[in-house]
Image (cartoon, rainbow, N blue to C red; front, side):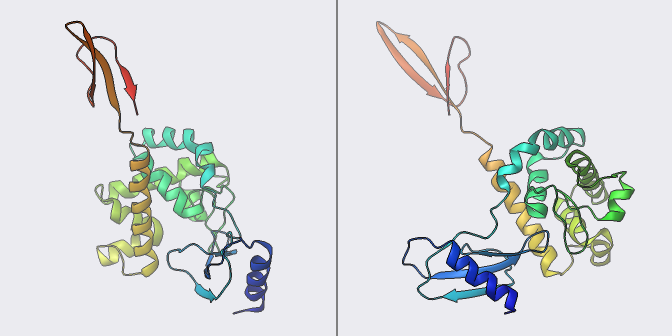
Amino acid sequence: MTAILRLALVTVLGATLWPSPAAAQIYLSRDAKGTAVLSDRRIDAPIAVFNVPGAPAYRATKQSLSENAEVFEELVLEHSKRLSLRPELVRAVIQVESGFDPMATSPKGAMGLMQLMPDTARSLGVDNAYDPEANIRGGTTYLRQLLDKYRGDEKLALAAYNAGPGAVDRYDDVPPYRETREYVKKVNAKAAGLQKARTREVFYKWIEINGDRAVPRYSQTPPASGPYDVID
């Protein structure tokens, strides 16, 4: 462990302890900007895992930016509709790429919400990749291009988004890179979760008169006629 990470670990444990007697298993990762992030929550492919006997659980050093998702929802819907993309897929790509941080910059130079590389941004006509509208417009256009190239195969399109089309073409499949395979799995899982979360189970309630009695009826399809209430 480097001196900086050791100091970060000690600082976090000292500053953000929770009153719980449980031991903490601490996961180290890096965000899109390359900053070390420590958390007691299990994460995919951590850089390192530390077992701290007797240490209470604590908060991550950086809060997830998922709450920013609603800020960009209008742009996501606009460009998803324009390009016939599933909105939940676009949301999942943004979540995995940047955690909805419009100023995110990766160690490799990828920029903004959908982490566009400089050459890719230029080819898509994106002058300022940190502008949310331009970034989402460019990122969704690129995703659409990849889906068209791979005949709608989301798995291959996502692999190409992460590793580049050349790698996918070379293997004629998701390349055997751990990072890319984890990326495809993570985006698909998040897209499925988002789709499920936004799908409401709706029931309809209406009143039928049976003789002198009013009988409530419930169904997942509305009645053919008459007033009804929606219950979700």
